[in-house]
Image (cartoon, rainbow over all chains, first blue to last red; front, side):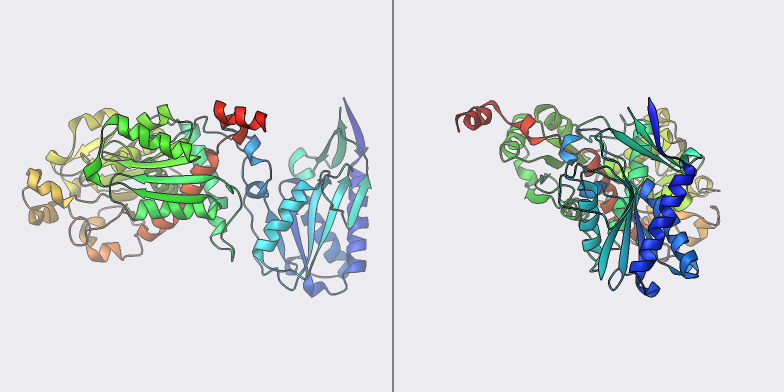
Length: 177
Length: 322
């Protein structure tokens, strides 16, 4: 059984709200950069970047964009045995130092993915600051990590799935029971 | 994503899906090389032992760098050829390494099948870094990846292996991998250095290099093992150079975008003309770089299971008593 938490309209509204917050807190666009965490975080980061550019009347192509895959930094690789997770490429084609990085993921839950992403960014350099944006915060953290920008809070240990136009043809957030 | 095995012994037993799994995994590791910190914590706390019963610089170094970039601890053991060594003492060496908690054992041995013997007797992941004239699977994989990276496909590629096929484990691993991925593979060299059975693997045999090189996409040149000349397998180096050296002129017969490969170490002026080795068509240094990324991918894909599962009975007893 699935239950829709956010429909397509609500997803877009949430992204717009987050973009507004980002603009409010980051006055200097020359220092702004977006990095999405694979897989869904990448699509949401791309859209946040475009919305933010629109609000600032800037050319989106002038805002640096990168992607992160956390697999090589996971803390549970020992549990996989012979069936290892698929690795995607980490591409950060700009110098992250002196940047205010907006790190983006679809769902924030235990905080372990974000921990790994922070470690990767540290290996790339020393950004001015890192701010975390997520579409859904489902609570039950296992690490002391919080997001700066949250689309919707929905406390649950159930499986929450974010669907995107880019993959599933429609934007929505659903609860899988 | 899985190779479904604990060891990498040869590409003979790899199917197309396994090969594709490796090809798809390499790029993220290669991306690490362009960062200021080239290391990831993936294999932190794991121990890799390189056990080389034959001399090697590049393969051993490549494995060592690959393991270190994944944060594993590496121990290198060089064994003199003179102490080789009956089956039993090989297993004992392996067991000793395992008692020292080695998670991976990377072995090179002059006897074909030595890695298999080790693999059957140990829990550690065994990786074959060259066994006799049998296989050198990571070289096969890195050659395959280099072709895939440059030509964007393997199926339909015309690949020519030139030189000493008989004594070349690199050639065998190349043939297994390339034919399974749908490449058209041919070999060229003196009749004494080409086993006639090789045709059974689905490769074409040529004794005339000018004929063989026509329209090929890739030429992979194997090292002439000069020590073989004493076995009278080819009349003279001079004659070999005349008939089988890959030269600019001969490459004129291949496709215009032909790619030149060599697993190293090269004998410039013997199997490969010096200007060919330095030409833009040569990807020999790229092969070395890719070798590290491919070996990182292999170490990752064979990653050992949880440590608790590998405790011996004695250790479990001690742990309980404490």
